[in-house]
Length: 85
Image 1 (cartoon, rainbow, N blue to C red):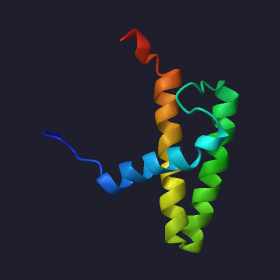
Image 2 (spheres, rainbow, N blue to C red; image 1 turned 30 degrees about the vertical axis):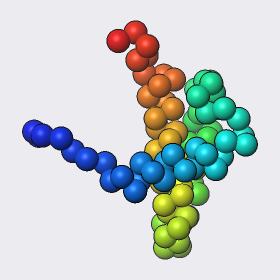
Image 3 (cartoon, rainbow, N blue to C red; image 1 turned 90 degrees about the horizontal axis):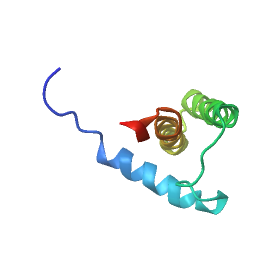
Image 4 (cartoon, rainbow, N blue to C red; image 1 turned 45 degrees about the horizontal axis):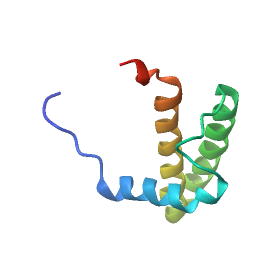
């Protein structure tokens, strides 16, 4: 594969919006979950996304897709050892 692949800007915007919407839950940047806590959060959000897809609830699909993506980014940062690169 060559060249740059662009992530849909509406998707990345939604990811950021979800972080703002959920900011009352705590500071996303300083949250460094234990693996078991991250796994629970991801399982919880994946289940919500699966139900939204099955129900064809497009607004919830967009919301929960962004939540899952944000959690994937958190795994990358928290467990991917990127601070050493």
